[in-house]
Length: 243
Image (cartoon, rainbow, N blue to C red):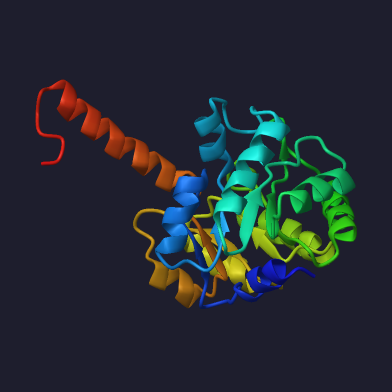
């Protein structure tokens, strides 16, 4: 087990969650680390947009992993990489590439080409990733039942998440779960739960509910773009951009 993976795993504490304002390049990584965060996470949507590609594996794996490598080189804290659905790589190759760039962990989603994977097949994939990685990667397994609009998304996420934990996942991420669904997810899943901090959902609420990890996805990147848009609009209008 690498020290960074060990540290990242230790930071998943239910009720005292690991907070991850997701980053996309070396400058954002340095900025977030300097703000005092003990670990960093990339966001695939932000990285892909920065590279000029659409999200959902629209960018080549080589470019996404190279960008993640630049984040890792800029940081002194553990970095977990949003590896989307694995880029079509076999588990051993994916693990080899992640470890080669110094990743301490990875996100792996269960949506492939817009379709939700069969849970048993995804569990087999996760088990193979775990076998290849040993303890050297912290696996955050996404359960995409909310973004794919399945019926009974809470129950479906719990069923998937239990399989993913059995396969060796360290944390399960029911992405886009609304605040009111979080308590049931935390109660129903036998390990750390990753939640999103959407507008209107306070971090204190999520901590009280027992989540172990909080992600922001591309929101920091989008807010940065909005600030740039405001700056540029003021310059275009011959106004003071610093007002």
